[in-house]
Image 1 (cartoon, rainbow, N blue to C red):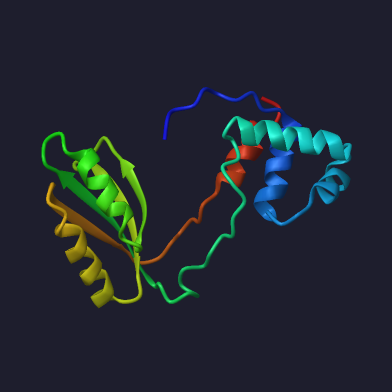
Image 2 (image 1 turned 45 degrees about the vertical axis):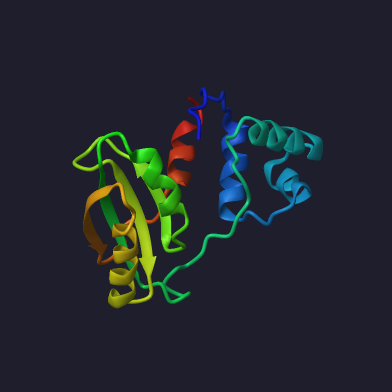
Length: 161
């Protein structure tokens, strides 16, 4: 994914994004009612933010625990010199690998992995280690999530700025 330029956002945009984060199923007409602006204004703002890549999509926020994926881990992956690109695609083919980030840290990549059990996690980690250009991994099992994704607070802090 390429780096994007900053997007000018105002209070109406942040309110609109906040409403969508609270309920992505809400319709444009309902959004216009809640925000006190015309339906066309809401639609134009949405289109502009979609075109700019601010809104990447409308999705469901899944509870992985309720789906039976109760074991989560952050896995640091160290890659053989200059081989990051050759590792990312095979990682993307492992269903339990939810996120992969390039990092400036001890390792080269940071992955979020979900599994049904400790044994399942071990099986997934073994699959990760079969990728040829991975030198080593380090795993931190998530015991409890203390703070969930909270980008809504970031939106609120942008109001009036």
